[in-house]
Image 1 (cartoon, rainbow, N blue to C red):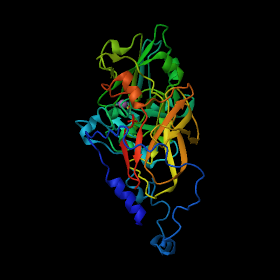
Image 2: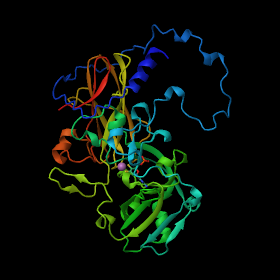
Image 3: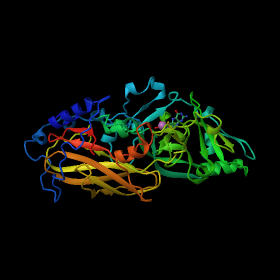
Image 4: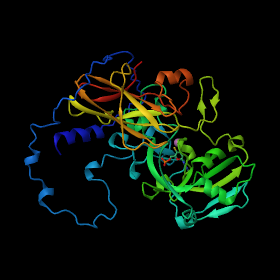
Length: 435
Ligand SMILES: Nc1nc2c(c(=O)[nH]1)N[C@H]1C(S)=C(S)[C@@H](COP(=O)(O)O)O[C@H]1N2
Ligand SMILES: [Mo]
């Protein structure tokens, strides 16, 4: 391993979870837009002192494995640090817990299946598809029971959507807490689903005119249920059986899950086994079946299904420090909105005093993440990096303080505040707040 690779794997090994730490750097060392941006100086990344090109490595002399030795491919062993991680103190038991997507290691817009964050309330159900059924009943003309093969005979659609848990960034309401984008923002993944329209399946059963709501239930040990309003069900929901081209992973609901584009992750019922059509939300019967946003006065927001416009810089970030010194620096991140497409992302390198438009690159799909870049010539002075997304409905991502002014700090849900990363002169990057 060369020096850079070593430094990088060390940075990965030393994930600091600054539990309980409050790194409020109020007005402290703001750099007032000092870091110069302009024409990128033509400094090649590292043109001197690298003799690696002259070395004779094993892989250049020894024959490699032949085809067929890896019937289902996995990433290079040098990428072994690119994994989901969990935060042990967060939940009492791993069967009702969450793991986080390693956002700082990914690029583009698609989350590879093996590192999609997971959130289970009763562990991973390992379902034999031949023994799995989906039942539709309640206010329908004909109750139906489908096999997976039955479902696959409806017309299919392919769509790329993000799934964000409503609790994503939930630990950051009171201040900068977790030192890594994986932990502050990693309860999101973005996948191309193949599935059938929920509308087609409901129409097959025939919905009664009084039907207004669906109760959807998972086939896992938690038998998780959620209420979905009929308008959403008939609009853009899918019953998906493929993710990124292959069968859903068990962690993501194999053999079938609900896709509820732009809405809270908890409504995307995995291991889907039952849809009951009704005339009122099931929350009115059992108050436990939804997430609740607690307001400062102790009241709760009621239905907050749609995920707000949000963005975050994934690199540099605490787990992805700047290792190369000043000069060319690629700032990159993700932006998304439950309302539709992201139309613009601004980036600030001085804690929100000055903003400039970032470059969105790659496909722009509705209710999907967008990848953005800002390429700068870093003068080596400290940076306070922020990103701010604006969606096609002109919703603007708020600062954390603006959000707190309205919602207080009692909630753990729907925190879409602007994130700040502090990049020190040596490239070490930390989760901080500025105001
Ligand atoms: N059956 C079932 N569906 C479920 C859950 C669950 O525990 N059981 N968790 C929900 C929650 S809270 C979230 S955020 C998403 C997470 O989806 P993922 O595990 O694919 O990331 O699944 C939702 N669907
Ligand atoms: Mo969730």
